[in-house]
Length: 431
Image (cartoon, rainbow, N blue to C red; front, side, top):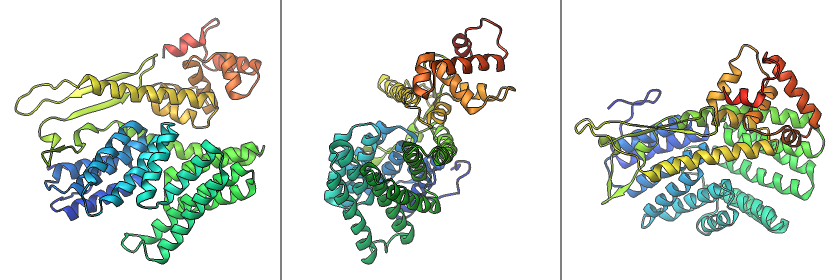
């Protein structure tokens, strides 16, 4: 069997070997190698011929973690829910379910559904205590109820769990107990940092954030580092410390750009053809029948274009029609990305340009590839114009005067060498 480019030769013969490679796929997620992780999970799914529900549940869990990290939040919830069903009756099924419930809560947080997030965090906590569960419940206690006592109690319980777990050799079976212990530390420290910031103790908050950042960088947990850098930049901004705010936001943008590229690459590979399904307790090898390969491509205009390529079966040579439900699901995912771009622009979020690059790679490529060498701020202005924000709106979102935006537009026209009288909005739409 031909292996995916960039991956080692693997041979999934036993449940043990399958679990070994699934763990490797999870490690790839930790370092933001989503494309490689998804490809490895595809290979495992194709080669595994056993009937272990644990193996199938862990494959689904790996897929769902990738979906969460690349922005397919609803797909992540659905996939983890399937994994939970497979865990019923397993020897360690409750522990796995606790992991999946915790992750489902994280996905609901991304979707802005706090009540559902609380429900699933508590489901997880009732089975097994994870550091991320304590942090999630702490943040929600502040954000939904302004209950700082409850927030602190969750964090202190989390810190105690970490200490006890290490003292009792709770990490003994892990491949790298020190790694897991440090990651748990960073997770709780980040929770404390947010707690103290909301309490108004900025000095303690920054100290906790810095400790968490140092650990996450040493562990090469890119996603966690990105979150911390963004929050630190915001904390400094609220204090009027623009020097440090710009410093952390700049590092955040640089790291987030690399993360966005990893997400975009992973969305371009065939995800549908290795989702594990249950059918009469047998693994369905999707590739032995049909492969659905989809790529998401954002083109200049007011709508997204969905491109589905259907590969012929080697025997029947018959095309398979992608269901209307599948089309609607993908369309919805794209619409959610568009809404996120709009929200980031309106909030003057430093992540706006990085997200715009991810959702509209074709347009960004045209703007950045010109010989004019547009700056990031000029490309951001172009992006807002392309999104049809008025001068008044751009001024409001970027906290500048109306006249300042008009001057920026005038300078942009000159830099682009546009003829006098050219409508900048129509010109941008024509790219």
